[in-house]
Amino acid sequence: MDRQKLMDYLENNKTQMIADLCDFVRIPSVSDDSLHVREALEFALELGRKMGFSAQSVLDGQVGIIEAGEGAETLGILSHVDVVSPGDLSVWKSPPFEPQVRDGAVFGRGTLDDKGAIIASLYAMKAVTELGIPLKKKVQMILGTQEEVEWTDMRAYVKNFPLPDYGFTPDGEFPLCNIEKGAMDLEMIIPYADPQGEGVFLTAVDGGTATNIVPGRAVAKLLKRTGKSDGTFDEVETTLAATGYAVHSCQPEKGDNAIIKLCHELCEMDLAENSAARLAGILKERVTDVYCSGIGLYSENEYLNGEYIHRNTMSVTRIISEPGQIRVNFNIRFSYGAREEDFVKAIEKLAAELGGKMGNISSLPAVYISKEKPFMKVFARAYEEVSGLPNKFALAYGGSYAKAMENIVSWGPIFPGEEDTCHEENEYINIESLMLNAKIFAVAIGDIVLSEDSFK
Image (cartoon, rainbow, N blue to C red; front, side):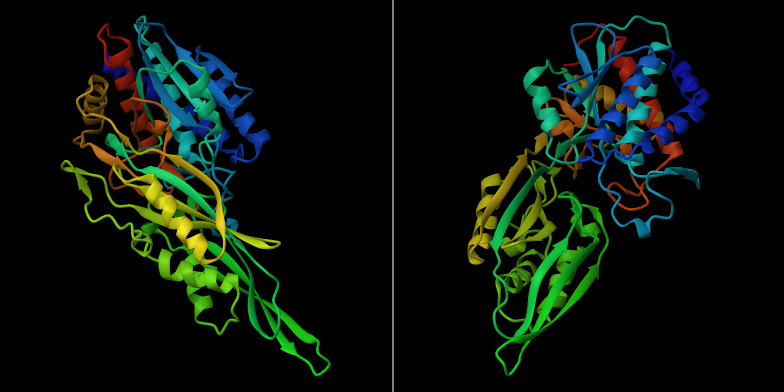
């Protein structure tokens, strides 16, 4: 395989890659906006068609498939077109869905997670086919539409379609992430009754934009009730807001949780006793430490068989006040080997202390893939060759589609030392990194699909 031809093709199409990424980002495909999510999926499929690949949507538009070649083995590339909410618009230096190229980067929601990686992967596939060598294997890009929420797309796909033999999802970091933490969302529902008597009452707490984002803002509503001689009350409503720093909940220690910050402020006030005030107290006492010590699940050991697996983390990511109840979501990232049922029991205990119950529960497993698998060695070699950096097998903190299928590894797009702005305001991808991703992927794809060898 002529590697220089791969590099030349990508460099010659750099301007078009940036333009395609900007057009892609202009589509505000927030997960719950089905119209724009479908538009984003069709954008990617049409780009694949223009490149000469077969492309179709399946499962009523839940998943898109772009593929080239045939053979006994299939190399899969899993990614997603949906994005998280832009969060606090006032923090953005430029509108999140009006991409700007500045300071050697493309800014906008989805540039890093995951639209830039899709553009890089598509152009990598095209660079390989431009060599004019018959493909000995199939390369198949599988694009989801609900990765940032409940994965209804990929769960349906796994049940109804043949799966690739191995592959990668460019939805994390370099180098190769052969270990990935598990992810859980546990909801508890706390009953709430309207205030009775005199005092300052906490009547509502609302914060968070998504279950997998440490919230950057939270607001409490307070009601001061003062008794009058005729048996009625004077009532004065006020609000109290807290501002934190929003980050992806896979590494909550990098952010400043506005909900927890607000709970600390509320606990310093002389609030009348009610379930909302007790909830604020419990969140302050049990959830301030993101490493789960407050619920008795602190991980003493960060290593397993000599490999780094980090510690369990937990953050409250959403709190919603509704008539008669308050919903609270806990996002948990558990290390490989931890037991999911232990976290369910811990949150059940918290709910019981407040007279509440469990709500929705969702979980995705932790991942471990052997470093000795042939396809892993190809990926490692491509990374070292193109980037000039040593490959080290690493832990992926985030939850990616690597959890959806066997033999899928999280790989790219963030290089060591780069800022991770996934799920943050002012998200961006460096253009140099975008190009380097495409080149690494092109070499890896070519070395696999142009070879007669098996890489299972």
